[in-house]
Image (tube, rainbow, N blue to C red; front, side):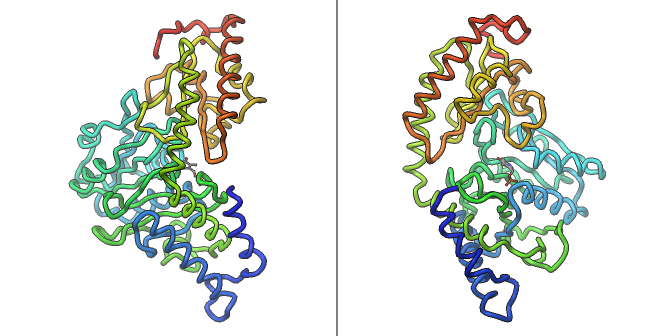
Length: 384
Ligand SMILES: *Cc1c(COP(=O)(O)O)cnc(C)c1O
């Protein structure tokens, strides 16, 4: 977390500790004022209005609220939902759950660069489609989906569009005036904010989106999400987004230069393949597969040098090759033997160079040991 975020949060634990829903005293008013200011600030960052921001515990909850909430509210329209194979499990699993309740879910494939093909999407839309859910930026490969075109397509077909922007917020402009997005999930902890806080943007005009609450209780958040608001987290969330947006261009250029420097060094190795579109991706994301090495050995070899992973932290408890890399057409062996580097605000050129050298020597050592398992038999020139 950025220390400036923490500094903003601290007084709301100890001094201004009131409950924002307590309307009868000054402690409550102070908390309410802080939340109103934060809500306005987050809304401004995405060119929305404050009434369109529903605070949640993070993007997982926001995705669940969007998908299940729309499914329940638009039952009279139909039971068909469309999403994409490379989505986060917090989108895929609510869709699978709805399928058990009798909804029909279409999971679209992606192209080998990770991008959704618009004609594939268009062909999937039906009169009974109530929701399309396509993420803004992928959490494993950083690929940015063409949201403007997807939104136009969905609105033309009068289908609501939800986007999981957990990775995109604070890393690229997201303008709800121009993008035809109806619901958008946000989270604070991917932009140097605290964990456990996020929001769902819910469009109020053209169209006014209906949503069935998934948490019932005191009627907070205009009835869409009951539960006492966590003032310090909300204040920190807003501060994190303000910091990211106010320095967006400079920071993304700096981070992208670090990412490009890392890839420039690593890509000189043979048998190393970038995963995902080369330029339509988050500036700080680098994901690649390495032929001729065992995936697990690769990770073990780097563990003590760098906090790097293959899939996402959210699924790392599962020992299965990434569903995202497999959706790109990578073989299970190459999906295992993949590394995902996330480069951020506090990384330095020296760290990049150190990591590049450690990665290269680990790969070279593994290759020279000639481990005789199947994954090391892939020829270095085979891009699958
Ligand atoms: C991290 C992440 C989530 C989950 O967000 P939480 O706030 O941790 O619940 C969902 N979707 C994507 C794309 C993510 O990167």
